[in-house]
Image (cartoon, rainbow, N blue to C red; front, side, top):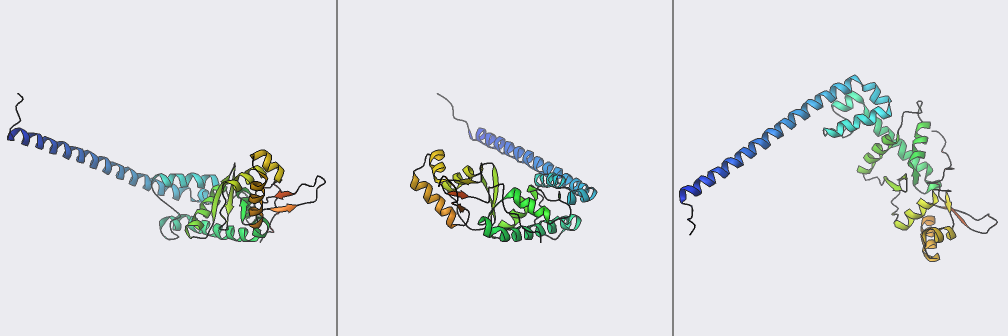
Length: 248
């Protein structure tokens, strides 16, 4: 028969477990303290880097994007507030605020043409036209400014359709069928009912229903003047021949 451990043995085992637990806690605390120290050092270096290269961060969009990546790694958000160290040093909070205002203006101005859905690339081009330095605005800048607008509950959102990113400024909900039609339209800027039926293997009713919804939402325009008699549904948000907006 196996002998049960006595009281002394149980106390010894419990004490050993306590010691192992304390050692584990101490190791975890040491690692945490080291990480905090490393992060503090990195943040200090980041501040020194920002002071040294603040002009490049303000003027060069690629440099600015890399700077944001560095900030994200140490949990710093230079856009969190227009007040404080980062805003005073770089002024990038004001930069993205002003960019957001211009994005709203452009989306409102183009809404009668595109129904509130604009290609991100086109938006960047229109923004650059407003600037003296045509290379001062990048897609990354636009995305960051739009993310701040989204936080305000303004209805602005970036959606992906195929390989393109579209900025939505109206509360229209696009389902899978709508997205597939928009992706199909990227090749020519338009689709026909027959093309949707053939390429997507849909019934005529499904194709017409989805196209009519996009038409009602102002995202499509009808073109009936063709010899083959087939109606074209044009989508300005994915067409390469979008109507430009006058500079303001």
